[in-house]
Image (tube, rainbow, N blue to C red; front, top):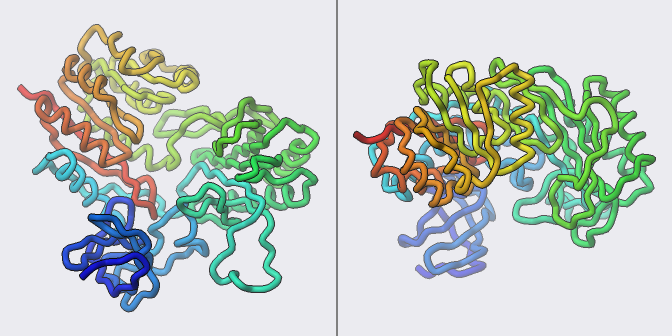
Length: 463
């Protein structure tokens, strides 16, 4: 049977792909169906047709999968924040584990490696400690609002519709953040709505109000608010800061990042301190961290502790080891390991992250960590002595081949590979499997209701 664009087909969803789309087959031809769950029987409309596959959207559900649940969020299926709210959480974990196994097998050619059941997130909702909301001149209408008279479409402060940069849903409640975060969001929206300053147009690149970023400290139940504007205007943003502080006394930091750049990134060219401290404090395990508005910090704090405890366990530390931490970022893993090793040396490209790492060491009274800035494929030559353990926590894109080659030349006895992308983890481990035994992999869920999954792999040098 030929599959054509625009065609409506009755499909049985039999699997789920990495990326979260359901899989159906028509005479052996693969169709990826958005927002579908294995076990669904649907009428789907073909939207894109390629030589080896097609993509489709559900037109109607004939019979729902037993794993399909009612999503609590009004914006489920429309918002790009989380795409699996309609899938039972236990099943989410099963599919995430399966995606790790399949990536190792199909991409890395790595078979018969123990992939453990996923360590679940401590919280399924209200787990994010950082949310970023975009401003837009017009809000994206909900399906039930289309065609109705008198619907107000002006101004949005919320999250993007998937696959777009200018379509923004005006979010009233996001279940991924604490309820007080939603209160802060509403207060800022109301202030912006009454402001004489215009909302920034995502296509016109004109206007004042651009983004709102909210951070929460899990350890101390305190908040940071970062208001991103296109120009510095204290007369407009200072009253907003004072209003927020009055209504929410546990806001300990309010900053204004200012950027005239056209790129849709909520990072300022410079920062103005409006009220309180320039940072927020939070803890992972026994260690405390200062988090500035633009510094990286894992967005699920209890999940980060689960991840780091797994990495520490896989490192097999006895207290006298020297450790090299590649892609160390702000030093969170190095600091987490510091009480169980002789010395940790971190390598990181971003200079501001190195400064944060050094400041966090001082904050915790740690003296056995040092950090080397620069591109890792160039700076790794500074490793003169073979470390006992190497921690590798690369970005989503994985490691550069030159870095892999240098790691194999250094040949540490033990490697712990921490991954946020099963596909690039499988690719990197494939380049190392002739030199290292891949003993086991532990997935850790830090992003419920998304297909994203962290994993920790334990490697040992072959004898």
